[in-house]
Image (cartoon, rainbow, N blue to C red; front, side):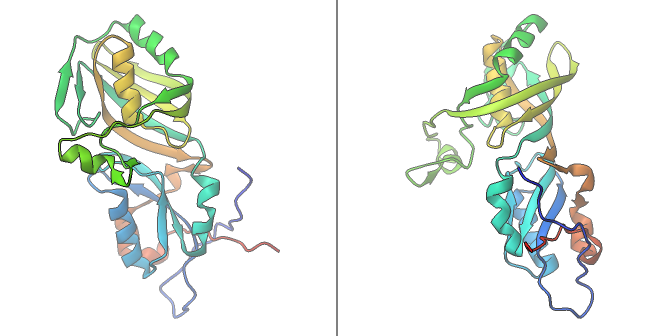
Length: 244
């Protein structure tokens, strides 16, 4: 992606100026909220309706959520395909209906051997085919997968091609794995966890997830949601600089 036209200045909404907020806002999303919940909080904080987000984070996940404010929503196509980096913990021994720790176990199996895990990781590196989770925002004929799954009628979702650039193992035990995963936009980490268990001859689900980067943006530059809600004028917004 070419360098983004931003000036890195702080937008102050506490003064009398009526100039609209424009630009990119980096948020460190807390657990327990949907990405849409975050957008709603920010809309109220800035009095700005034109706000969208890139790369949905599940409610149980934390980390970087990139919000596009005002005219910056035009940058969506440039950012949404950027590589993403996650810190993930995968639990072996059970697969759930949601492919994460919030779901109900639907299959159990003994944890795999370390050699089987490492072999499976190789199979899940590079360009791979991935079936999205049954509980996802994917849609078929206008029906959202998660809506159908909640009614007990999960959709048959088509596999999609994604790229996993690498797994950096941080910890590997007999029943869990912690890793930093770098992947293309559109990759479901829950599906990676599910498939890792299957390929290793076991069962697995995603236990914890934190997104740390989206393209050039780092979660360390993100603002906590409570700061945005309480003191929005002190939050750094990357403002779009018009072309000369």
